[in-house]
Amino acid sequence: MEEGLIKGSYESLVFESRGYKVMVDINLAALYETETKVLKQQVKRNIINRFPLDFMFELTKEETIQLVTNCDRLSTRKD
Image (cartoon, rainbow, N blue to C red; front, side, top):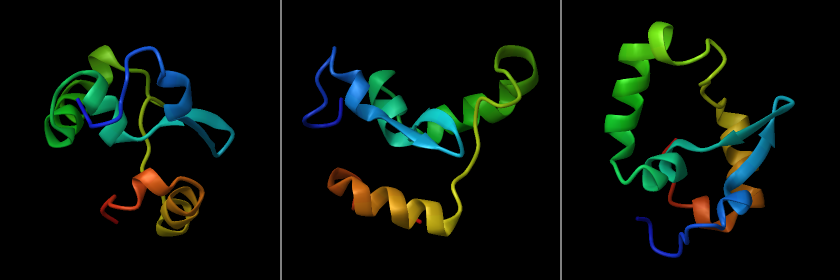
């Protein structure tokens, strides 16, 4: 798991974006103890059968900047 990520403290990993409560992929992957790349591949391969259509969306560059500005631990996040 990602350093500093403690089971039970998931609430701090949830953000609001576009009116939805969301979790960024790197944190969700850490919770499932997998790589972000693997998580995203599985969602894309199974989006119709296993996930609701609004399960995943990508942040715009501006949204990413705003999120990183508000949360220092995401400063290493790729654009």
